[in-house]
Image (cartoon, rainbow, N blue to C red; front, side, top):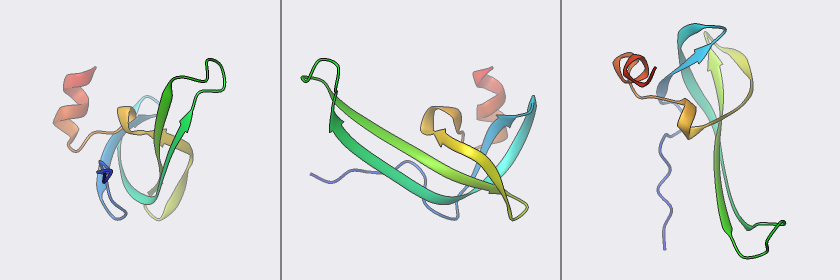
Length: 78
């Protein structure tokens, strides 16, 4: 089974950062699938992205639920 990643390296995405809508570029993608260490039954999938704005790294890792393909999609989610 293949895993489809939502965004690829080089894609532009929109997110809220410092109470501002920001367009960032995906610089790294990380995906992990593991069994929960709390109940040992649940399978957890974790997809996170490293981003940059104007070639400067944006601190932290960002989940796919924080990212939007367009500014309009971001605004509609608020």
